[in-house]
Structures are given as structure tokens and as C-alpha cells.
Image (cartoon, rainbow, N blue to C red; front, side):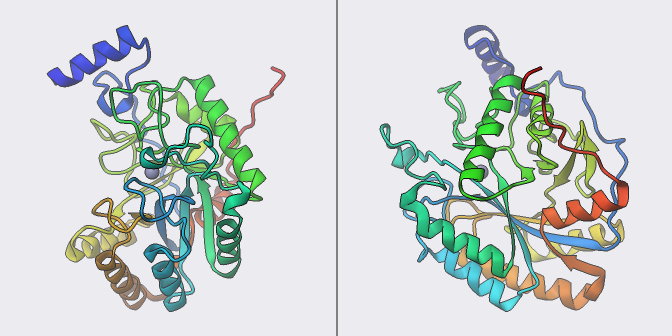
Length: 332
Ligand SMILES: [Zn+2]
């Protein structure tokens, strides 16, 4: 608490910015009474954070850049074994990893950079062959507004206006690469305590966002939003993360059962890197994923459908006539 109070004073009075939601003890907003959005069948979505053209030998988050990287090979193996799988990749369109930071070449790992052409065409081909969705994971993944605290939380210190600008730039980079994302997840989960990032996500034109884990993003410090159901918040749909691939199998099985019983969405989350984090796409977690997919298929049969967040969103949009992603009038 004392540490948080010192940080708060520094952010408010020296940086003159808002305290991020991750340690704001005054934010009382709750979306817990929002109506749960229920799909006809229970969806199971595999989703990864941090795909980018940065190769596997970087020490930092964000991988998949070299097509011979372990994770690219294993992903293909997984898709060949289970071609019905849906994968949502929260992709970093212009990643700036700290150990490969090129001051005069900041677009080195931009997805539309000519130098990454092979990478991009590989991923586009893969998404044409299999059910792969690309969603936005910010622009750089790094924040430069507060150099003394966590650097991987790109949106933690951005105002509504700055967030909107950044999100529009993200969409522009995707557009240059010929990709149209409809979903967004904030790098490192964090956001301004006034939650104006959500307004910016809607106004930039996104339809959904993944803004919470059990203790991250909107559920930092206290729970504010459902861990099992999608809900509408401020004009977008929020998809929670609820299964971590580094959990023990028994915990995963129990949680899947619970989500199926309550007609929620099973969202299996990992990081698209080989071994930076415990929920990375490592050999162990790869084996576990294979076991899990097979088990879900065998246990629940056709009552669980595999797909991407985009598939779930489309299903809900049709059923509930959702109106999301209101674009701002640029001249207003
Ligand atoms: Zn990330």
C-alpha cells in the first residue's frame, strides 16, 4: 500500500498523469451487473498475445518473427492435428523490444515493413488455410510516458485523446498490411483509472476487446467484470480470459466444466513466445494444449465449438443485434 501511495504521488504530482487502474484504490466502477451475453453453443477460443515479426532470440516479449522459430513450427503442428481450432492472435503491429531498439529504424518490426514481407505473407496464408484471426495489441507494446515504472503497458498513462490516436494508428498499420482487426487487447492489461481507454476503443471502431484476466486489466485490485461471460461495456463487447495454459491440468478441467455448465466462453490464453513466461508456448505447454483440445473434443463433443473471438462476436452480434464500435466524427 505504501509503495502504491508513493507511486500514486509521483504519477499525480510529478508526471501529472492519471494513476493506472492496476493500483488505483479509488476506482469503484463495476460491470458485474451487466447482462451476460450467451452464445447458442459454448465456444472455445485459443488466444495468444504478442505475435510480431521479432524473432525468438530476443529476450523480450513478442515473437514469431523467424519462420523457423519453435513457436511457428509448433503452431503449424497444432493446426494440422486439429484443423478445426480457432486462434486469435493479439498482434503487435510495430513492436519495439528493448533489446532490439533501433532508434533510427523504429519500423524495423512493423508488420507492413518490406523487410518483413515473407513473414506477413506466411501469416496471411496461414490465416487463409486455418481459422486464424488477427486482433490489435496496441502499436509498440511499450509506454514512454513513465520511464520509472513498468514499460510494457502501452496504454497505462495515455489520456482518452492519446489512446484514440494510438488506436487509430494501430488500425492504420494493420490496414497497410491488408488486415482489418475488429478486436483489441491492451498490452500488459493496464489502462487509465478513468477507463476512458474503453471509450477510445469504441470510438476507434473496434467491436470487441479483451480487457480482463482474473486479476489483470479491469479486474485489477478488485473484480469489476465477469470472468466467464462476454458482456457489453460502453459500446463494445468484452471477452474475458479464463484458462491459462500454465495451470495444472486438473484446474483447467474443472474450470472448463464450470464454463460449459454456465454457458460461458472458454478462452485459453498463452503468450506467443517459447520461454519468456510460464504461459508461453513452450514444449510442455504445447503438449498440454494438445491433450486439452483432445479432451474437450472427447468430453463435450459438438456442444463445444472451437473458434476465434471474431466468430464469437459474430454469433453474438446476430443474436443480440449488437451495436458496437461507433466511429468518431473527425470533424466534430
Ligand atoms: Zn503483450
